[in-house]
Length: 358
Image 1 (cartoon, one colour):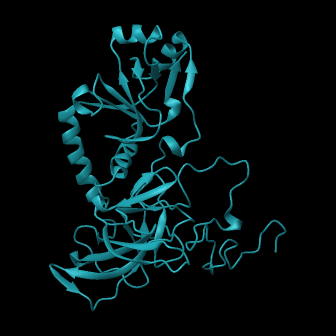
Image 2 (spheres, rainbow, N blue to C red):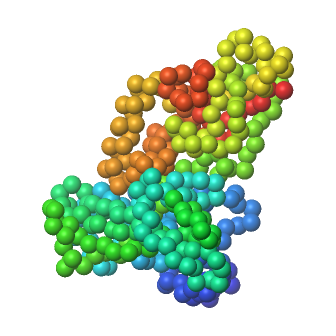
């Protein structure tokens, strides 16, 4: 054996679970990276949360959050991308997306996004907590005309703990900290008829494509004097002066971001004099700019394109996926197209796009 080669481990160093043959990158049981695949210490940390696999329908990494296979596979077929005339069989791997919303440090699944609370029981961990169970059904489909035009119905399960006397409207999923979701049941549907007699493929449960935004980056807002900030902003396409009501990551019409509200000339004079809130500049090189009517039509288009790939428009992830695919680095909504009041709203996707005028 070459002295530079490392022997392959058969067990996870973190939880002791069996590792599959080959060169696994992480343990699907606990989410921790396999030691032989750990990045160099000098490498930049990944923006996404946890181990990822890149599938054919997104530029960004996608996270395996459960399923019947122990290793993410580039051969997994997402919805709409199976082109063979026959059905995928027990030796094939397909990917199904759970409707999850990206939050700081992980994901959340909520009943308003389709999850159903289906049971609650005492947790068997010696505490007074209860275990709340959630399920949702998703449909995997092949490319048009393939797989006999049949669909695979998949029921996904997830669990969350709740304190005594409390219930939950959803759950939080953190890689390595929460149990992975699992496939409760799966069956083929031919037309409107369930076909329980047909074998089903192996199923990976994937989180939607997670586009790096705001809190995925270890960044802070810049500080510049007025002339320096104006020069910096004019290198991009958005040249106004803005106020920033809150610097925390928020849900916005464009997904996760930080909204800034454009101020009038009078408002700018007041703020430069220190009478009210501070002023900010933003730097965006390719922002999406739209009014209310344009945004309404665009959301319909995004929903149609996302549905063709099995993605769910009930979560912000789908808008983020589409904006990233089209190369937008921010968004500017006219005053009638956003919920913040005042002038135009600029949605920054990173704190490094914002400069505080000192």
